Picture 1 (tube, rainbow, N blue to C red):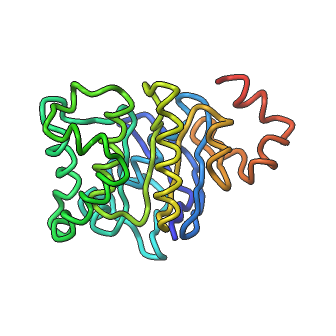
Picture 2 (picture 1 turned 90 degrees about the vertical axis):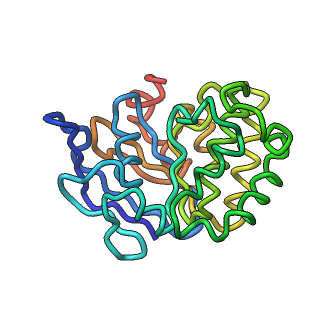
Length: 234
């Protein structure tokens, strides 16, 4: 469904990722792992249309995915960015509705909003409150809900558990499992390797902007070099 073919991305004169290839099948949950600075967020940003690939190609259903965030959303890809990136002075409801801002997604926004409130009932209770007044976990619910407002086929999750109280992490994980159960394809960036591998079916490990390892949970944890490359850097 989603394929990255030897992509490279530059931030100005700095090359952030050099050679990233991966594939994600329809309905799969796939992890993107690695130490800070490995290129995980840049890879997600490239898929989301925030960065243009300097080399290689990104394809969705076999067709090129252009570096245009509006078109990416129109084609069914949504990003939950690292740090949530909410509008803190706007209400929860206003933040959620921003997820259906792209014209092609507005028609189904009422049903999408009802689905978000069913998934996260606390957001319905707090829909008139400013998003900046919520807890970290509740803000993350808003960020996920905003992405779901575009009814995505592919959901990109960049460090969704940062700043979330441990007791709410399980709540978010259960919600993500319910979303995945509805057929949504997921790509997860997560620093906690064991948490990530408990959730995803396969994973890719990045180091210095390159994929250095891929496989199932068992294959990755069983790799002789993995502990030195990643687990020792958590």
